[in-house]
Image (cartoon, rainbow over all chains, first blue to last red; front, side):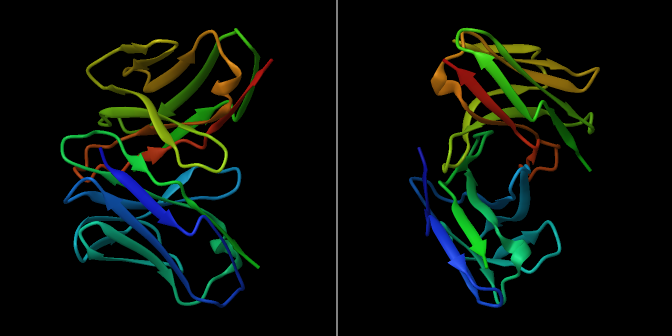
Length: 112
Length: 113
C-alpha cells in the first residue's frame, strides 16, 4: 500500500513570505494527487488535484499554486502568504482501482 | 455542484453507548460515500465506505447506512470506547471521473469514560 510523506509538520511564517510544502508518495505509481486545506472548525476544502506530471487543476481561486514535477511529488506554493492562508494542509493520494484516499499526516501552517 | 452537510458538529457519549453521525448530499448522481476518522494532529484515515448500490455495510462496531431516495447516509458506532474519540468526516463523490470528494464539515466525537 502507498505511503504519503508530508513536511514540514508545522510551520510559522510571516505575512508576505513565500511558501513551499512538499508531498511525496511511496509504494505506487501514476497516482491522483490532491491538496486539501482544513481551516479551524471547518471541513476539508479541495485546493488542487493532479492526474499526472505537469497536470494541475485548481478548484478555488486563491493565493496558492501547485506543481507536480515528478510522478510522486506534489508541491504547494505561494509567493506571498496572507493571514487567511493559515490552516491545516493535507496531501492525499488515490491509485489504481482504489476508491478511497490515503492522506498524509498534514502540515499546520500559521501565518503571523 | 455537490454539497455535503454533516450533523452534529460535536457529539459526546458515555463509553459503551452508541453514536450516530448523519450526512446529507445534494447531487443524486454521487455514487460513493466514505467516512474518515481524524485523530488530533494527524491526517484522516478511511474507516468505512459504501457505494450507491448498497444500503448498509458493517465492519465490527461501525456501520454505514445509505438512503438514496432521501440522499442521506449515516455512520453508526456501537459500544463506543475512549479511542473512538476523534473528528469524523463524511464525503461524497460525484461521478466526475477525477475522484474529487466533497467533504462534510466534520463531527467531533468525545467518548466519556
